Structures are given as structure tokens and as C-alpha cells.
Image (tube, rainbow, N blue to C red):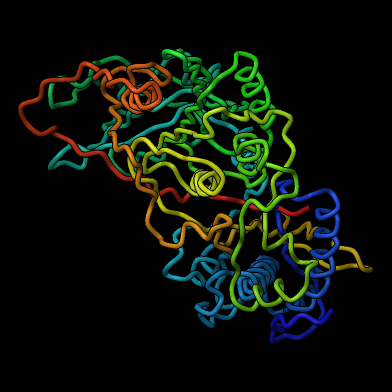
Amino acid sequence: MSLPFPRHKFGQKIGIVGIFYLFYQTITKKSFMNTSKILFSLFLVLSLLVSCEKDNNHSEDDELATRMNQFIQSNLSTFYLWYDEIPNIKPESKKDPKEYFKALLSSKDKWSLITDDANGLLEEMAGTGETYGYGLAYGRFNNSSECFAIVQYVYPGSPAAEKLKRGDIIVKLNSQTLTQNDLNKLTLPGTLNLGMGKRVGDAIGPTGQTVTITSRKMNTDPVLITKLFERGNHKIGYLMYTHFSKTFNSSIVKAFNEFKEVGITDLVLDLRYNHGGDDEASTFLCSAIVPKEKAIEGTLLSKETWNTPCQKIFESDPQYDGLLNRFFVETNCNLDLPSKKIYILTTRETISASEYTIACLKAFMDVELVGTQTYGKYVTMYSFSPQYEENGKMVADEELANWLIFPVCSRFSNINGYPSSLEGMIPQHEVNEDLFNGIQLGDANEPLLAEALALISGTQRRQAKGRSIETAPAFNMLSKSFNDIKSNRIIHVK
């Protein structure tokens, strides 16, 4: 098959080609096998795109950087969603592949990533890397450069869980007041000496207490909390889900089968801090929630829209169907809810694969959103690693094996074409959460959960006791950038 992919100007057969990393099993086994063969053939064609001819006038490091840059240019010019906005910058013009990658990105793109620590990034995405085991929100004091962090949640058995809980406030790091430049250090591996704070009225001040935590490798199971609430004739299951990782699909199976055993009538799915993750997990979750008569294995779940050249190629032949569509999978834990309705808790930190899940569910059942507007990130990122063709087989380029790029390659929508705008999803029931009230996640008095329980049972929400504040707080909460690997929907094809 002749594919109209651009030929690199050096024109000589190489060997660097990107391989898609797809975290999903959303197609039937037969379709998956066919898709794998298709992509392998595609990779062989792509192996003609970039020259790896060494320039003896360059140092070895310069030659490796140029090879990596050629790999970046080749893959972005072919698969990147905004391929037609890539500037004409020569691969040999920049010595740092990270700088070169960023220089090629569209101004519309806030998300595409590159790393020279492939293993570390993949572990982080899978939820098996080094961590402190907490989620944080950030704020800054008015008329000051000083900042603070507040704990959103902790994973059981994590370093953070030993000494911290939701609502705890951090005002110092290693005896120094926090500034905005320090906030990322609170998630970097190592040992942290944290100075704690306390809110009194409209102000936050230090308590003098110090907490020391050391990161370690651990499994961060995204099924953080499961609970059962009974309200009248309703048995309501609550599940707090922090990120999408196929590594922990078994935890969904366990939780949902336990819900089925007690006969839940309704489900509250908490995605308020779920920034996304791999496609296989989101497809699995959708397949377990959509009514059983509709979630039939192999039935269309969602669609992908690529850049114009790729879209034309993929639409021209049925063998590319797996690149344009996602399908329901068998889960052995479908809830088959009697109400055919789900309540989902959302905030601005409900992003990407979380929004994909909401969009897909909307096409098959009644979805009630409770909380605040979601982020509005409806694109899919693919992962490419340097490889080359040798004797008809793709072989990893060992000299560049530590590199991965994650460019945005497609937009997703449900079977009805939703979402079609770039705005975040607005809840039918707007409720602001309160990190300062001391109420833990899963507590029936927590504002978002309390609203969902009230809606299900038809009762009035019990208002949690709040603070009586006469004046505006002496601080503002900061918006996160969400440019980390977990804040995406990632697709990986083996």
C-alpha cells in the first residue's frame, strides 16, 4: 500500500520510526490483531522518512541530538494534529531535542510532551513509580510571593498517609517559606521537611509543626475509596477514582462486583481530581458502567478524528478502523444499574480521559454532573519511541532508548459527536468543594457527595458547618497547568 507520507529531505533509508504506545483493548481480538499488522506495515513505510546518516564533523552527542530531532520532525509532520503549523526548523539547528520538540509545537498545543526518562515517565503514568502518595492544591497569599499547599487526598500506605490527611496545609519547605517556584518541588522524589500551617478565620499561619516524608516506589491504586450509602430504598455505591491506569483494572472489577453483591441501585463516581491516563482503562470503566444491553463487546463506543491527511488515509480502507474508532470490551463486572443513571463529581481537575469517560457515558445513559466545570481537554496523545527497520523488523534504537515523545494526534468524541466545542463540561448541579472544612473524601457531609446523595434520595442536602468569615480570605487558590503525563489521554498500540 502506498501512503502519501512526506519524504525527509535527506531521502536515504534509515531507521528511525515512531511506534504508537496504546493503552487499550477496546477492540475485538481479531480487530486488534489486524490493527497491529496494519501499524507494523505503516511503520515500515515510515522508516523511509528520516536519514540517520552520520556527520563526522559533529561530535557524537551532536549526532545523537540530530538523529533524535529528525525522528521528532518525521513523526510530528506525519501524525501531529496541527501538522500544517509546524515551522521549518532544521533538525541540526538545535542541540537539545527538548528545545527542538517544543519549537515545532502549535500555539494551540499546551499538552504535548517529551522526555529523556522513558522508564520513569511510564512508571508514573502507570501509577507504579516513586511518589509521596498525595494530591495537592496550591494557593498564594495576597500581595505576596509566598504560597502554600493543601492536601487533597492521600493514598493508603503511602509516605504521606503516615503523617498527612486531606485539608492539611503546608507553608514551608526545608524551613523556607514556599514561593510559586517551589511548588513543583513538593512532588519531586526525595525527602521533604514540611512546615505545617493552619487556617484561622480568613488567614493562614504557621503552626510550628514539622513533618518529614520520603518518597518511595509504590503502587498508587486509583480506586481510592469505595463506600455504600443507604437512603430510603436506594443503595448508593460511591467510588473515588484518581487516575486511569490499566494496571489497576482489576481493582475496578473487585469494587464493582462488591457493589453488585450488595445490590446497589445507584452509582456516584468521583472524578474530581482525575487528570486522565491511559485509554484502555477509560474504555474498561465505560464498558463496566454503560447498561449491559448496550455495552456489548465490539460495539462502537467513541470516535477519533486525526489531521486531514491521516484521516483520509484511515477512512479510505476498513483495515484502519481501529485507528478511528474505540469499542466496548468485556469486563465481567458490568453494574447494569437499575436506574440507568450515573452521578459524576467534577472540578477543573477533571481532565482528558475523565472527560472522555463522561462524554462516552452520555451517549448511552443519563449522566448527572455535580461540582464545577471540567477542564475541557478533548484530545488524544500518542507515544512514539525511536526505532529502526532492520531486515523487515522494527528494532529499538538503543542509543535513543531513553527518549519518548507524546504529541497530540487526534480529537475524541462520543458516537454522537460530543463534545464539539473546546469548553469544559458544565455540571447540571454546581457545587464548590471546600478543602478547608476538615471533611474527608467519602464522608456523607462532603459538599459534592452530599449533593449527589440528596439528588438520588430526593432530599435536601445537609449543609456542612462552615466558617463565619466577614471579610475576603487573605489568599487566592492557584490554577494548575496540568502539563504532566497523567493529565492526558494516552493511546498505545503494541
